[in-house]
Length: 333
Ligand SMILES: [Zn+2]
View 1 (cartoon, rainbow, N blue to C red):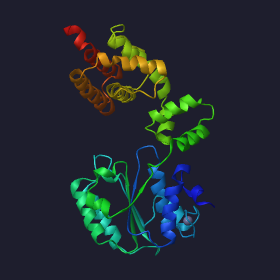
View 2 (tube, protein in one colour; view 1 turned 180 degrees about the vertical axis):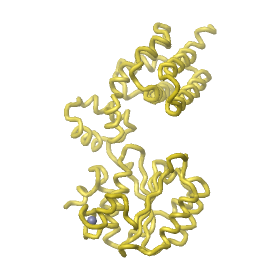
View 3 (tube, protein in one colour; view 1 turned 90 degrees about the horizontal axis):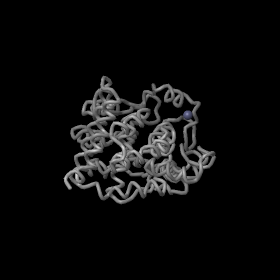
View 4 (cartoon, protein in one colour; view 1 turned 135 degrees about the vertical axis):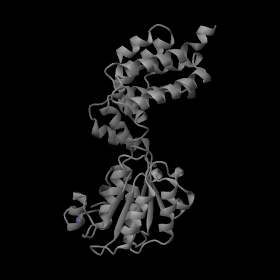
């Protein structure tokens, strides 16, 4: 089996080989920080690494059949500890790192290694991060800590420096598009390109964008934004015309579009759509734009938190805010 094929996704081949080589040479050490922007399959990668280290068969990746692999698949391996954000909390807490410390003080059940996976590592609060730092200052024998982070820059530098780092960000556009084409054989190259950009230049993000119907939504959204800004469509009409789309998805796209207008780029739009949207720069000024960005965040917060609020009302609020942001200057003039 080639090393590249052992990686969960084809674009992770190089990173996977690097780790496999370190394992074979006994240089795996105690801690790895796996980083990469969302949509690059970090979780699949770190999961595969944890399984491979614990697997009882020789090889660079987990066999899937041994006692260890079966326990991992069942989520009950006694030598594995996964640390994630608790359901009712917004971050990883110090208590969880204390439990992790205890986990590492016990000897291994199967004599191979003890593996912990912290995801996302940047969700550790300050005290949790400090506790982990202490743990890393005296690393447990035969223990392996895997940290997963989309934003490694948010971690304590002292924590980062105690980990060996591996980044999945190095994916090329060509590799991403080739994989995307294999997943969506019916899609035209322009569609793949749009999805790639909508998905944050990441293949899994692109696939998620396709599954969420973002290209079609974008085609509907841009004319409404332009129409409302130009005074040709009323905010309430715009809200009605997009009634089928989840408000939080509309807000996500609007945030990106507004950001694109402000930055003068809208590469993921069709040529005409981009031209119409970028022409809005003459009605978008920093102050109303700032207000609109706050409105968007508030609508999104409400759309994702309060089930009792009607989506239609939130949608109207959003479009009225857009109308206000884009027509402020005209009214003054
Ligand atoms: Zn196995």
